[in-house]
Length: 536
Image 1: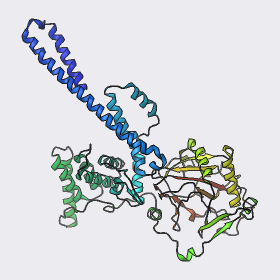
Image 2 (image 1 turned 60 degrees about the vertical axis):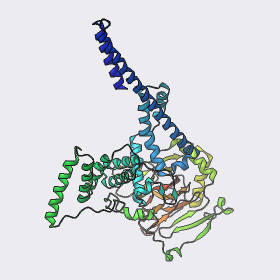
Image 3 (image 1 turned 90 degrees about the horizontal axis):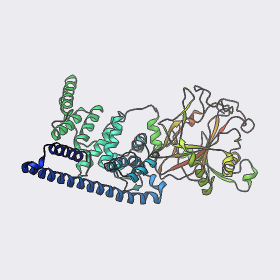
Image 4 (image 1 turned 90 degrees about the vertical axis):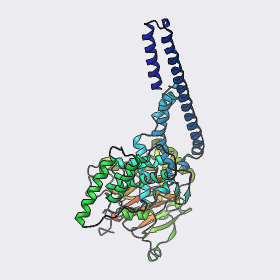
């Protein structure tokens, strides 16, 4: 379009100049105008063709998105339960709709742009798209899924049409690369290259993929493979601005290493790069491997001997009047520390009401900074939460009373009912619910002491992932809608039970809703008297 306008302006400018020389007095000069007009017509045809091409592109977009939104709006939560769908929604609204906007802006459409402007404030931003991409990588790590499984929508127990294209995989790799996460950059760039080599169409070029992949492989310490990939890049684009220099540097570095080790050159492995080819770098979490294994259902310490000490029973809250006629079903989940599950705690109607109250108030969940005591967001807690008071609705008051009846502990000094929803790859890495001695007085302003116990309601089933795990003693508790689990965070002495360090595993498939009540020490003096020793 710009080219056409520039050409038109130049021609008109030329014509104006020539007009001043009285063109009509010379047939020869007028003949020049004939050819000028012919070129203008050709430019006009190119402009029309460009407009038609643009319109065809917009129609193609509309057709594709019409089909997609019919599926997504039929069951929004079920659609977003698949992490690939959630990621692609983030990407689509943050990146691809903007590309469509730019296309339409070439010939401004007031109606469309006005609509875009109204809705843009609600669009996800770059941080959302990056966060969704990192969530897929987190799921990949936790559940040991290769990139191909994700790109083809093959998740445990689920086969879906939600696929990642060459360009999607490239963008995933680029997100990791920009974060200096070369481990994941390699996995996703390799998948992008594999799909491109299989004949899939893409916007990104093979040279761009090889450029990122070769350097990421180098960063992972695999010089022979980095050299082989860089040679492929040079073969495709001999004028590439970095490839030649990188190749010489890699070869020189490898030669030096071989000399120092007195070894001969071994060509790069012909095995394709996949999950397990390279070791994942260690991070801040010491129990990472144990935690992720439990999330996969591995490393559980539930032996037959331990299982023989677990029982189920009817629970009447020590003959609480509200539970005498209808006692609750109680199941032991673990013996020491004692963790119990209560069945049929919340009805479907109560769950829907709690979710209805919470949704407008959901905000990014925070954690307490152990050094400053200030609440802040963190990458290791990915969820949104809301706090509900008893005055908000009779259902909340009823749930609070039910928790008090079941536990025998007063909830007058407890925190508000917290409702949380975990999105794509939602998790809360291993943490303690109680405040430790090395922290500032986290709950001092409340004046209610430490968190003595946790009552956790599961308000949804989760198709895959989302378990509550305890790495210290190897337990995993899986969400079951309408049930609740309960445990003490403190011994009777008031000392913290460090065994209760626990985590909410990333949600692989599904939407996880929970609500919890953190019960505090004050008011429990006669309900849970102190013990005689530190660990009573």
